[in-house]
Length: 317
Image (cartoon, rainbow, N blue to C red):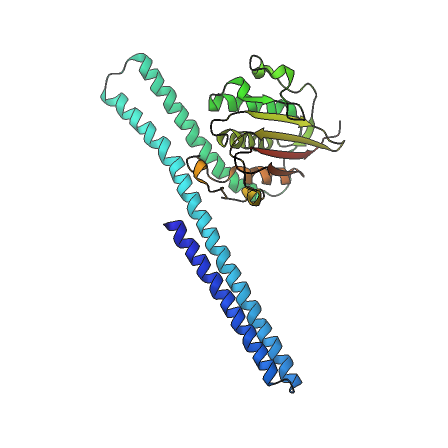
């Protein structure tokens, strides 16, 4: 109901703006027809009416943008509130159980592990919000070091497998054409990593954050059809390209650029239960730009999977 109300407000202001512009144009044309002999007054009238029309267009555009921004802020607040409240409630429940009842040691250890998992989730949400603020306001000289992107990606993949409790074959390295590499069979996928070095110059923590966000997005939006392939290549002497391909819900063509905006989340019934703040890909884009690179998404549409490509300048060897 809240979203529907906002959309009705946007529609009202849009129709109002268009109606006012149409009325101003009609008055302008009528005034010109009635006063076509008075050239000076005609010129001044055209200027005045053009100014009024421009002002109404700018005012309507501003109002619509503000309403959409408020809608995004509202969705973000709801998402963050849920992401914070759920693990806190869970931790409290386990603690109350431990306080009130005698628990067997095995179950006690299980409760401890669940509380640690909830704590990691809570910390992850806080870090996402803090990182979104940092990438927007970071200025001045930034720390840069020579990094092997392949090794960093392998590290992030192992962390993602642990965090999401994945089988090794669900998240694997692939060749540049998207086919699984021979050394990434499920039995040895956890040991697989690129044979070559891919040197880039950047902030290790920033790049680790960007890679982790891309992997997490691919895993979350696979929705059961979990087959995430990662490939790294050097298309030329100046760039290193990381591609993460999933076989999940996909992205509508008109949303491929908007998913990198702050707070933006694709609204659809199949992903309504996917947890997130709408900040992950925004952070990835900000980090990529800060490193002189770029990021973009490709998808054939609903249920066709998504490929996110992160391109970075190659460090001189």
